[in-house]
Image 1 (cartoon, protein in one colour):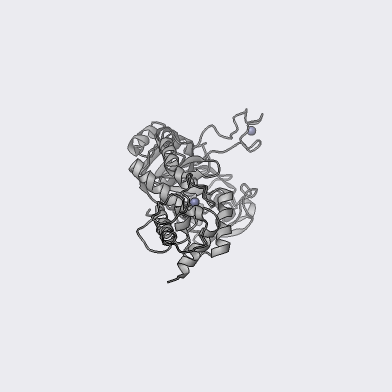
Image 2 (cartoon, rainbow, N blue to C red; image 1 turned 60 degrees about the vertical axis):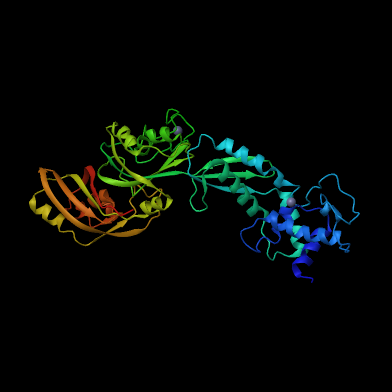
Length: 426
Ligand SMILES: [Zn+2]
Ligand SMILES: [Zn+2]
């Protein structure tokens, strides 16, 4: 019986020595519950039997090195040959795995995945073979290394391989023989309040030097001494021994505005060595800083961060407005009657970093009270994205209607607080 499988095997074995792994991998998609080196060994055995039975086969005899024959007078090869695809790479797998285990020590993780950068020469060898025999039933060497290394690591570390959402990626560079450990980010979902004015939500590099340090920023490389992000991240970075952080907030308040409503955010910790950080403890440490109050709700994932960032949340603001001329109750009534959509052209204060366009935002609720002759307080509930300051000032006609426009009385914001933020389920 000749079969296509045997014909292909014969073609593979014709040109020099190939190891069991590389031979078996060419049939890697046939039968389950076995390994490529078992597949390769099975095929090689057939040709060894043929040899011992005195049958002529065109294979390179180096492929039968190591067999003990009953009949064949084939010379026993003393030395094992080097595989023409992988140079017997798989013999080193255990050494590589142990190297990885050593590097993994100290990291906190429950699951891992292996990624391999296959050496260029091996890719070339594999592709040259595929030119000859095609790729039907084949598996690429990368997949075999990842899997076999993964199995060894599971055994040696007691952790689970996880392809979807691993805590750690073990990156193996075959050409360099290097193993690199890349911990996945830790994501924490929380809510914050900003109790003071004058700090931005996130790190703000100096706009003159971009963070390198210059005269304008007194070599600090930044526009503000701190940020909500840094205050919250500080104890977390320390606890997780992480290299850096990014905060993903559901919108942001102006630097000079307080945020007394709870704003949802996700904190991303980069390259954490430890992952099981105590959120309650972190929360307490952050809250010692009187400028920010935080609730660290739970660990989450990247999807939550994406969701939070994209969320369009309804907000309620409290604004103290100063008018150029005195205001009375009648004026207030006119203002709180604004029910129409507010048309806002991109405010002049942000025009340098945002596209110039006209947007419409809805006011969902508006009440007001007079505080003094020229000062009034308003509570305003709006759709996400309303430029509240411009609703007051009119921004030289770019926002319509506006407090200034309705009264013909120049209005400006004395103080602004976000007092309520509607949340989404995460
Ligand atoms: Zn090989
Ligand atoms: Zn600077």
